[in-house]
Length: 176
Image (cartoon, rainbow, N blue to C red; front, side):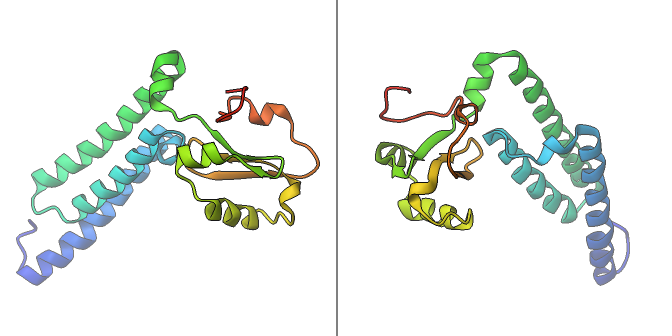
């Protein structure tokens, strides 16, 4: 690729291509914005993982053509992410198709067993999140929500503003 003796060519490719690919990712993120590595939707998460995979492929490219293809693929991936984000804002159907609904796993200190089964989340995972939220009593837990990103949020204290639970699915309850 650089027409150097094999060990030097390998070293040069590793250093130059990796550095250039990283700089290309920085340029793309500056153009696209921080959303490029968000976890707002499943597509955002996939785009983040795919960008990392493409970065690795670029660093290991054996030809300039392969390298250019990887750099173009990164740009196309992030452009598709921007396009889909804009379309999601305009289309309720696309938003519903691409987004998960946050789900209530626990409310007012009580586990919601149907929601745990539906989401395949173990009680132990919820308890671990409650501990990391520094909650000291289950009775103080107002809500535990499996977010659209797959993260678990713990709301504890004396009360929770209903606005925080707007759009959250309550499985097995009349407010679905």
